[in-house]
Amino acid sequence: MSITPVEQHLLDLCAIPSLTGDEGAICDRVEAQLRALLGDDAVARDGHSLVVTPRVESSGPSVVLAGHFDVVKTEHDGPTRVEGDRIYGAGAADMKSGLAVMLCLLEDLARGAAPKGRPTFVFYEREEGPFLENRLGDLLERFPALKSAALAVCLEPSSNQLQLGCMGSLHARVHFHGRTSHSARPWQGENAIHKSGAFLSRLGGLAPRDVTIEGMLYREVISATLAEGGRGRNIVPDRFSLNVNHRFAPGRTPDDALSDLEALVQGEAEIEVFDRSPSAPPFRENPLVKSLIDEGVEGVESKQAWTDVARFASVGVAAVNLGPGTQSQAHQRNEWTERASLERGLAYFRRWLLGLA
Image 1 (cartoon, helix red, strand yellow):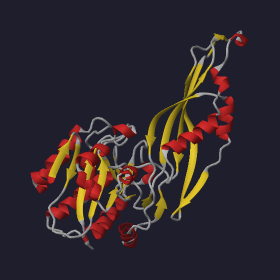
Image 2 (image 1 turned 135 degrees about the horizontal axis):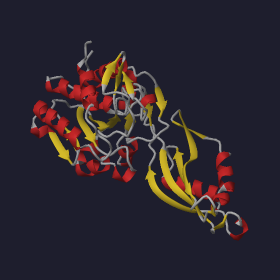
Image 3 (image 1 turned 30 degrees about the vertical axis):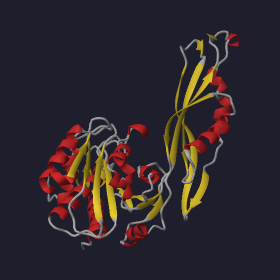
Image 4 (image 1 turned 90 degrees about the horizontal axis):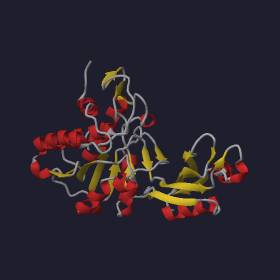
């Protein structure tokens, strides 16, 4: 079986465990590769993240290609491998496929390919965790040149479709309070689980709210995703908590989302916000985004989830999502990505960034 260079990169990356918070080994490996390829001056390390600036001769715009090292914990029935038209492994889709493309592009530049712009490549840690622990924010502060980019491309798995903007995300715990009693005499207590019923009924009756921006459709939704409560099977509970996740459209803020949640709770419970992630606009009219579309992406759609395009947008950098990973496989058991999609994604970035057929 013939393995192409980008496939080999993906296999090598997937073979290195890199759960969120444990990215040291993969960062060591990629750092060593890139220092040998490009020289020490081109590679800056910060924690377990890398900012790579290859020396190029170009007067074109500054662009950033970004991808995260970490993966979520998933289950796999076999080792990292090629099987038919798929490559299996932890992170094969999300998002080591994007990292493999970035490594191939850096090899092209090391061989003398002339880019249309001035690229910087960012490999970073802790994307899959809470917003405040994501290291991309630190890198944007510590490497100010990143904030002057004309465009950033996050190579998140999108099956080679250009995904514009992203939803914001608010996570909050909604705490219902009651009073304990023996379950044989519930009238002596106040059941916190029962007190959540009216809120859950209102929540279950909510329809998605459609928002169209620059011709792109985003759907605002609010969902209960976790529940915790109870002291014992024969005790009326005095506390019941729900994790509620509000996904809100571009143009709205976490404070707007909190106002929505407060209106839904109607003062019946305590709201504890613990994770706020901003939304990002589509940037569809940006000339560099138009140039991405003109190179023949496999589709253009809105990003219904959250990605780090929002972090770039928050510092004034236009940003989009585009990556070769098979989107439906992100965070899945026996995660895989299509080999053909990986090759098409590399070819696409070579055309757009390097002008190579």
